[in-house]
Image 1: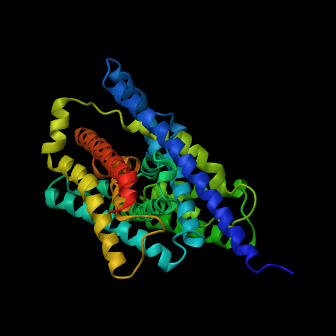
Image 2 (image 1 turned 90 degrees about the vertical axis):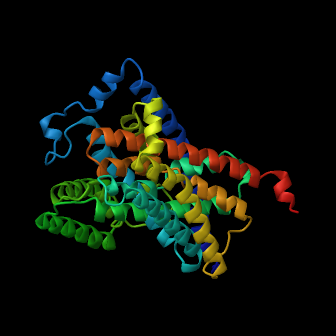
Image 3 (image 1 turned 30 degrees about the vertical axis):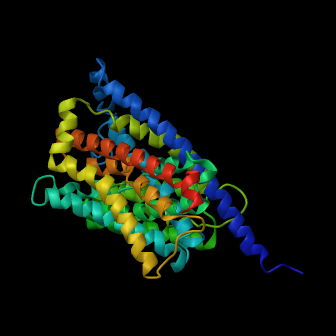
Length: 400
């Protein structure tokens, strides 16, 4: 006689295994991204700094240029390879919506509300300092959370961090990604070409219908994804959005064997993201430049948004959600843990750097904003470490 609980138990086991694999890959990716960032910073501030600039701005062969959108190596990474990163993000979002923490209203409420606070307050802080100025478009920079670095901060504490807190932060970061993707698609997209939007819609519809009848193989997904990406370029939408749209046409089924997400995640986490960091974090660092971060409206807005806005927004919105009965703290998670996770959510980095290139066109402003992202993210990481260390100390656990 079959056990009615066997199927749900199997699904939970597969989801738990994939969650562990996802977190392990994110942690390893964060270490490589950290190394790549240090290399880029040292390189860009050394006597060889001109070679750093010339490498990433080197013109590509004409056959690699799509609609004039990828003129150099940096754009090839940011607009091409990063589409794979957003494909994996989209797949993880879909998995969480289907089988994970976001699959029920009750379980999704707390991280969703927390993520909303972690986007609204940083944006408001930035806008309050930059409204009506040329830097006002940068409000999307401090709303992002870097999953890899945020999870890495928690991994440092090992088993002292409750599993529920890791799941909460991962779910929060995924909802945050949804917000960041929406911001890119709506507010950082210009000159829409309707005919190419129609091509995108037809491609998505065809893939969705095909998925109903069979599990799509790579030899179908690859050309269809390439067509979707190319159509996005000509439609005037940032091409990385094509990765997210493609993800939602791929079936999510918890079965034995590697999924598309399982196959791609090591490549994006261990190769694409470190390459992105190497190509984008090499900014000149000097005392005057650091002073500009603190004194300029854009720099202050980014740093305060990431450090103050994230921790205040996530913590206050979480507290309100619990008080209103919309959700509850995960098992074993204290308010000290949650505040530490809120600080970790202030590590914007990857997506923040990505939005910086979309928000600004002035090279000097882009460099200053990237330095502000770096300062704010490092400050958030240090703050998160200190808060979590206090929250996990024996004295704290013992209670009053």
